[in-house]
Image (cartoon, rainbow, N blue to C red):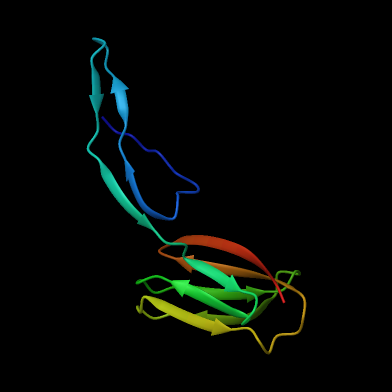
Amino acid sequence: MYLNIQTNIPLQGHNYYRIAFQDNTGEINYTNTIYLNYIPAIEFNSQTKTLNLYSNEPATIKILNLFGQTVEIFESNNSDTQSFSLIDYPKGAYIVQLEQSGLINCIKVLL
């Protein structure tokens, strides 16, 4: 049996998942419990104007203007937490694009 289930917004912190299913005889079975410790990958601190990346995998962070043009690219290393300052950027709206392990996540930032 193969199951593919996606949680788009897991709760921050410790999460445990398992699935109850009923087979064709009416018996209820359970999958093994899976543990996930979810920490948001990237967040913006509007007071210090810094991006904080929480990850132990390499990642690429692109800062885009609203026209989709790349303003700056940051490369992260394998440390657990890294901060990138946006304090010298002109006021305005930006898109922060995080690319990691083949997945892309975007957040909007107002300076």
